[in-house]
Image (cartoon, rainbow, N blue to C red; front, side, top):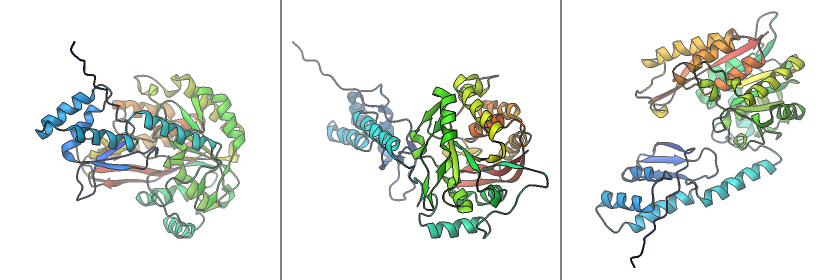
Length: 414
């Protein structure tokens, strides 16, 4: 009786990983890292082996990979190379296998049980030494430790929009937005609507944990967090692990603490992408869970009024090679001139408080501008239906030589 050989299926490569060309001159290839920080490993896959990664899709077996490696090397003895590749990816936590799911469960449980949200980007996105951070932010805000008064006579500043790009990339826009705040805002609850880069679509992420930065520990408006959680039901994920790694709220907390002290009171809300609202003629609140959550925020806004100040941590267009476009993007030149025109058209809808008009433009071409701040912006415009805005500064920044991110500083008033 002939034996039957069985070759196991290869685990799938995690789709949530970051992939980019290696920036290391003497180590060319594909750089892979984990934005969720389930793993702190960084791998560089040599160019000759990059195609081998396509076999880690959950539909190929180890035999398929072995046959590919034989064709690639011209050597029948590729068992050691095959196993090394599998083991390296698995040990790094980059495959959807038992090791990864165990690692993921431990990380999520650790965040849920932690008493505080620890800083994830101190030392990379901004200085981790408090004195150096103070000096840096004072320089960003033109030498002042408190922002200059903003707005015109009779305006009540109800919110600002600032970038969530690394502060050094968006200094002018951060400065313009935070200059709208005054010392009298210190006692307010800052409702921070951040982009959830890694969260579930059509869902919101909440946490009761105070945010820790080099300045100290923030306050949290627990009553409002719990109110949203009750009203949203499954529309909001409590103690969303994405809070542990997300920068779109952390950067805003750092600026607010610089201006008003470490115990500034915040209500942090991560807004996932509104996938259902991207269909022709659809609105984000066609999803019942989204409708409930935005409704809860609207009820809070109407009741709390001037006791709240809204902060949107939002970037705008993402264009160029890094983001899958077929052209090299240069800030303010070439294709980016048309991007600026379209960005400003969307910003005009924001200034007019026109949520429906804003979303109509986002939905065009399935948001080919790739605005990662669209969900927080739409949420704010719906929760604050009588708001009006003013563009303070718009800019584009080359995040690398071939790719551009755009962002702006705005203030909102009633």
